[in-house]
Each structure stands twice: as C-alpha cells, then as structure tokens.
Image 1 (spheres, rainbow, N blue to C red):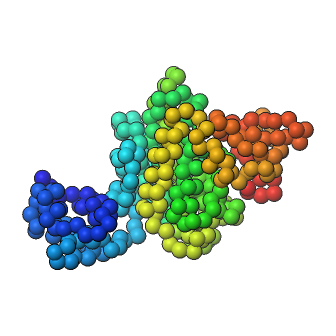
Image 2: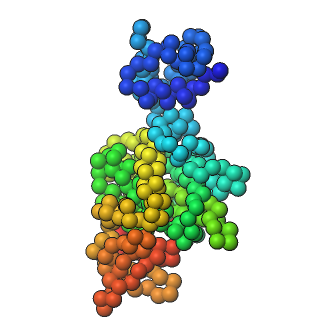
Length: 332
Ligand code: BTN
C-alpha cells in the first residue's frame, strides 16, 4: 500500500489529539520512514505539525491557501464533493463542470478555482475573477426531478452559503432573492445555475457560486460592481480561510439538498430561508421581460416564486428563472 498525503492530513485534521506514527504505519501498511517523509513534506508545504515522543503527531496550523489538499482534507460530507477538481486558474468553473459532466463525472462533483479567466455572471454578463481573495466554485448535480424544479436549486444553495458564512463569522447574512447574498445591504456572493435538458429530463445542472471573501478594500473589485460589493473580510474584520469556508458550505448544502429532494420543493427550508430574505416586506421593482412593475415582496412560495403585492393589492408570483428584482431605493 502507498501512503497518501491527503489522507494523512485528513486524519490529522479530524483527530482531536495526537495520531501515533504506529497508527499511520498500520493504516497505510508502510514503514516509519515513509510516515516521517510525508510529515516532513507537509511541513515543507507550510503545515505546522507537532511531534511528541510516545504520543505522535498533531496538526497545529495549516497554511491559508486554496488547494486540492486543503479542500479535500477539510470536507465533512458523505456524497457531495467526494469528486473534487481544483484549478489555480480555469476559464469558468461552470463550463468546466459541464465538460466533466459530459465525460461522466458523478453527481456531487465539485469544481473549485482560485481564478477564472472567463467567469460568467447572470444575464450574459462576465464575472471578473482574479486570484487570491475570492472563491469560485461549481457543484455538478444529476438530479432525477423535472427540469422546471431546477431553478429552486439557486435558492437552496443561497440558503446553504448564508448559513455557512453565518456559522464561520457569527454575522447575519441576507438573501436577496433569488441569487445574491448580502451583508449590510452589500453583495458578497452571486450564483449562476445552468442546466442541460434532454427532451424532458435533466442531464445535469451546474450551480456556480462566486464569493467575495478576503478583499480588503473596494478598489479590489471591478469598477462596475464596486458600489454594491463587499467582501466577508471587510465586514468581519478578520481574514477568512477560503478552504474551510468552502467545506462549511458543502456540509450545509449536502444537508439542504437532501431536505429539498425529499419533497422537490422548498417546504423544508422555507422557515429558515424566510428569516434570511432581505426583500421581505420591502418595495421591489420586478424587471419582467413583459414589463416592469413595483410592489412589496411578501415572501416566497414552496416552489421558490417570490410573492409580490402590487400597488393595487393584487398578488403576482415571480418565477426565479425569468426576472431580476431590485430594491427601489438601491441595490437591495
Ligand atoms: C451573478 O451574476 O451574480 C452570478 C455570478 C456567478 C459567478 C460564479 S463564479 C463560479 C461560477 N463560474 C462562473 O463562470 N460563474 C459562476
């Protein structure tokens, strides 16, 4: 058997205390020297490891980098992100996930990048994606449900990212229906869900998420989004470990997705989702291709539609796939 560096790191990370050299030898069926070599390699890569005689090894600190190893060793999921592709730079994680899907990549595959050269935003816009501070990822799913249900996945993952960021930072995170996340009214995250449909069934869905994480100033954002953008770090005041946050998101999304597929609607998530909805009881302008109108957002339906009460008190149901919603006094 061969000793696997990623697995050693996962074991060290998941253990509360020390792992003895002997345990590692037994697990991988290798010599003490082989274990010692791997430990040294990890140290060279920036991992701080303590070695205590008769007790073993303990992980004290990890380098704050985004890498395949950092991501896989932090994952606490059963089926999601078990197949994981990390790239320092890629065109677009959504496009790459679709390409992998065509090649037979499994349901739950995660594609992560530090930078994108052709990042895609909603409505045909581009998503400027420099290296170092954000995280860009795409989850590939091959669900059994009907294509018209897929737009709800944007809402499901928005909920998961909100909860994960709240778990990491303790701050309140809002969802601007259907696909933006905000802190203090400013955007920290955008979501782009795309799907391939064959006659009447979904071949695959890709859910792409871009999160502003460690930018320290507004100047680090592209000019066209600067006014309404903020990073988690700017709000939180401390640097974030991107790999750790990504693992939190996957853990939450796995749970939320399982709740969602039971009913194929948002009933199981509605209560929690609603407490995060920043549009609730606020005036919104609905940019419907058939004509704009304003009203007050009253919540969402189990199928993900936004309930909007128009000025004449009639109720409209707004389908996430079709429209964009703006606050009438600004971005939210
Ligand atoms: C938006 O316009 O708000 C949606 C932006 C979605 C960006 C993410 S970054 C990862 C994934 N890959 C892409 O090319 N786009 C999405």
